[in-house]
Image (cartoon, rainbow, N blue to C red; front, side):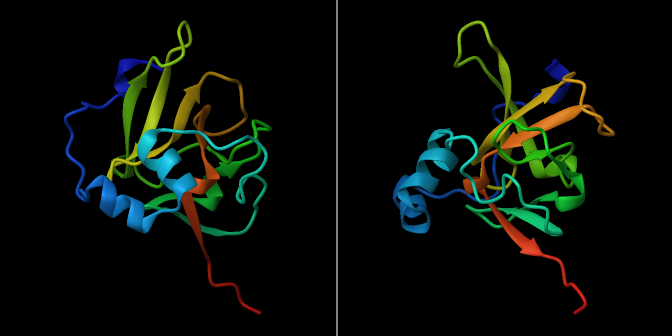
Length: 148
């Protein structure tokens, strides 16, 4: 990912809680992924294969992050989106935690929770050729009102 998709690490989130306050709000597994930049196992998340229409929210703070209309099946084992709901909903950080494999981390702009990573140039037939690889455990899906 090039530098145009990174944001300054000093960008301040709008919702700041102590670790103890986050632990009260989140399960141990949610805390590990959202607050400690962990990763859930592939192909086990509740939204990996979901095709329902709606808006995906940050599980930690409730911010609207992605629309189901931007979700696609990439086969990677995690929900994939080709764009966030709006660029101001996420922030980007360089991630060099795997030697020789630099990545771009995606975080919630409101609460600075880790969501996953974004990749480009993989050849997916999407409008952006971007793959936002997001942990299901970081999301809550608000279903669209469907006529019965």
